[in-house]
Image 1 (cartoon, one colour):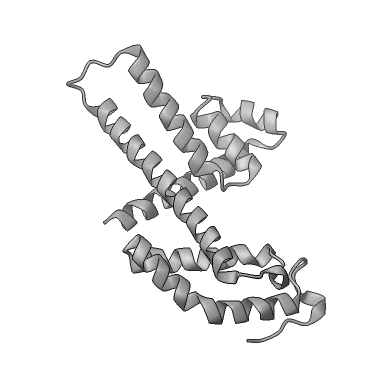
Image 2: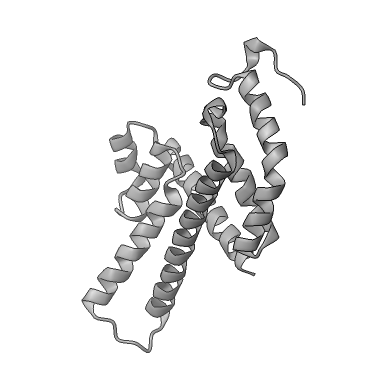
Length: 185
């Protein structure tokens, strides 16, 4: 593993911590990967979750870890819970969208409001990883129905920036949804 000179080491990441993380990774990653494979029954998801678990350690003082496997399990379990919640919400949304598209059913106002609320929550979930302004622009346009000019004024940016923000958000949502559907196949 190559070392970065001290002057270009990213802030907050010390070289000794990187060595500790490398050692921890070599010692515990195969075990964690096997554990995740048993829990997730998909080797690709297990590999991704294993990497995500170790990425979370970048901001942790590794020297203070007394039981690294226990800590890794806590992180991995939390990631699995988040994954389960996200998949459940996505399944609920797909069910609601299918229900809304089914023209043979007469939907009452309460059902339509509930479906719209669910779709709004999913949009928030999909956009939570975006930077603040692209997220705000997307939600103002798609949920709030605001014109680009209004959004630009509210965010104190140009209309061109608003278009770029919304394009970025749409690409992010498409990528997120496409990846989830690809995993389900």
